[in-house]
Amino acid sequence: MTRNIDYRIEVATPLLDPRLKQRVLDIIDILFSDTVKARYIDKELSNRYVPRGNRRKVRAQLAIYDYIKSLEQPE
Image (cartoon, rainbow, N blue to C red; front, side):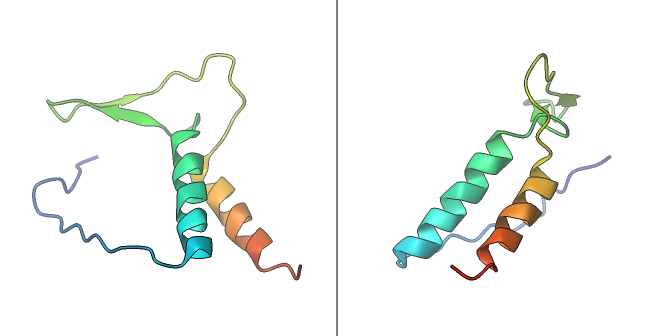
């Protein structure tokens, strides 16, 4: 699979709302905990799967979906 590394546009903006900032940080933590679809992209743009070893299965896309869905629940 090819990656759009050369032609993509990235945008940065400050997160002023502390609650929103925490949600973004939570999602980043979930992404870093992925053990199912995680890949290393090296300087030659080679995509290698990250070996899971004995770690618990975490698929970031599904975990983020569950996280966002849990935010919809009334407190």
